[in-house]
Amino acid sequence: MEELQVRKTDVAVINVREVAELLGVSARTVWRMSQRGEIPAPIRLGDRVVRWRLSDLREHLDRKVAAAAGATRSRATRGGRR
Image (cartoon, rainbow, N blue to C red):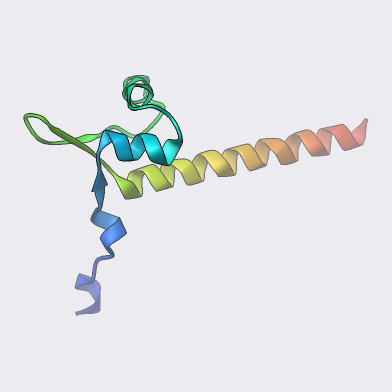
């Protein structure tokens, strides 16, 4: 039975306004970022219903934070050698 349990955040979907709020940008910027492949692609639930998986966005943000932290560490290490 435990394997059937699913966290709500694993299946939660959010609309463009909620994505914009999460990222701190406008809804139009969310669409631009999506078109450029800067954020995960949304899923289409109907003819006029488009949503993003919250889990996809969180994973994407976690990767960006980890990459930024790695770049900061790399710069600090290089700077210390000079």
